[in-house]
Image (cartoon, rainbow, N blue to C red):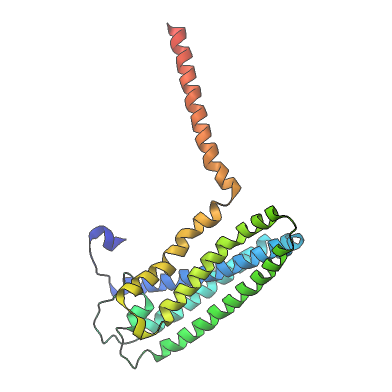
Length: 246
């Protein structure tokens, strides 16, 4: 944002380190929370009578705290390991933010093997989250297919299909960005893929989840309706006052 407003293309070393840490932290938190949301939909659809017991306020707080704590540790390991590598290829990033693959391209060819180990661990973590997402959705699809009414099936599908779309986009593009083979890499492709996994899912989250909430849909409508009623009451009272004055 600073570079866009001031028309610059530079960032300090400390700023790049902080940006990389925050990016990894928020991406990891996003993946964890998307996995937790999948469990939430599984319990709500497949075990609705146990929802209050399995997903009480204390359980939600514990899961959120675990997501943030694990993401902080994960981001710290990645950031320390990445920025401890010697940079032998200059200081020009071919990306619009401090992305780890773009930084690794500036390091010596023999010095990023330990970062590769972290990427292997990352793939395993993503695979575990993927399993915890796929298995509940298989059970959800089976449960939805047993709903007798077509309207009930449509309503149930509408509660989790947007979440499934965001999860698929986030995991596929993020995995492709960090694990794509070098021979298919290009600056334009790197930019597009980076936008798809770092910008699009967080942008769609409020639209997909908040706007599907009926209370949030009614709030702007009530606000607009209330303002209209206040304006009309004000105009009516003004007209009455002018009549009394005349």
